[in-house]
Image (cartoon, rainbow, N blue to C red; front, side):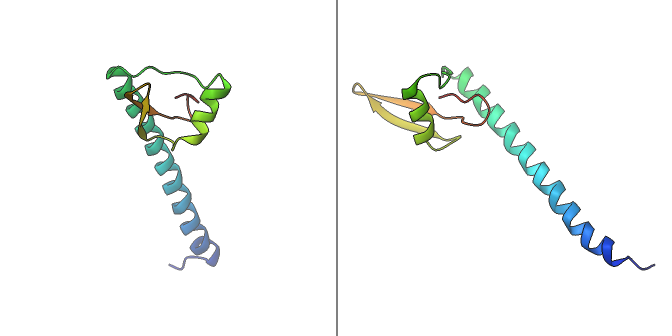
Length: 87
């Protein structure tokens, strides 16, 4: 059997598209799971509803735990600009 030229070109594109969708779903699941774990550990979700929090959200690396010093204490924050748009 011979595969037509169109099928030879379409197959790699279809595989790439499926891999892209699969990776996006995995990343979304990981972000949700991380947020669940952080909430269980006592983190408080604060929406970026003020100018200061929006600036914090933009300045922080997304989906990473970051330590900062605030009022002499170490504070850990996590920014999610994609799903909850919160810090």
